Length: 115
Length: 110
Image (cartoon, rainbow over all chains, first blue to last red; front, side, top):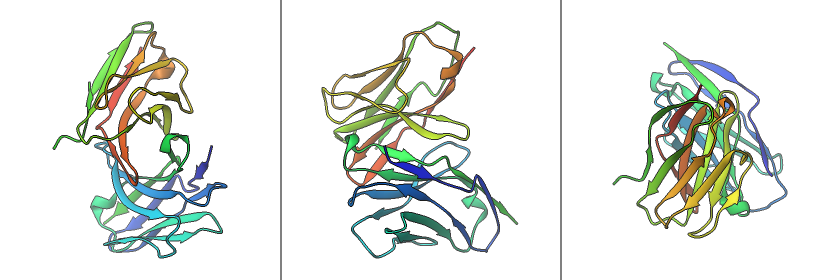
């Protein structure tokens, strides 16, 4: 099974600043999806951003962008102009085209946003 | 527009009791999944159903059974609950490039 590693259990950022969350993954496949999910204290799973492996262009959604390095198997999330509402647990996830298309999650990074 | 609905949201069980977690989706998705979330572990796949009538084990299937009742519903059963099954459980259904999650069930086994 593919493994997803988030090496930062906790991160902190000041309001209005930029923070980058790291994610690496291990796979032998060439086609797959990568995701970042946000989980606030309500425990709802919210899709932040998605990247298709065949696309070289990095995905962007408003203040959220990724740095996708396919050869290095790296998929980091950059949050610009951080807001208090960004405080949450963030999960990186990999979706194979095999194994029933299940998502493989990293262990998560807890993001604290300070005023 | 309900999406994925899980019931119950909270449950406390005694060791050895059984229960079924219900999940239903109204988006006509073929694939449905059950995950458990434990502190520091992320979400781990318990079972999945790639299509109606099929089910397969995920990473942590021991102690659980599932039923894909129809295309909409995918239930998770604990036959004899153990304290190690204390967790938050999520049901999800997938379109190709996006997963939709239920609100989760916090289960405590005492």
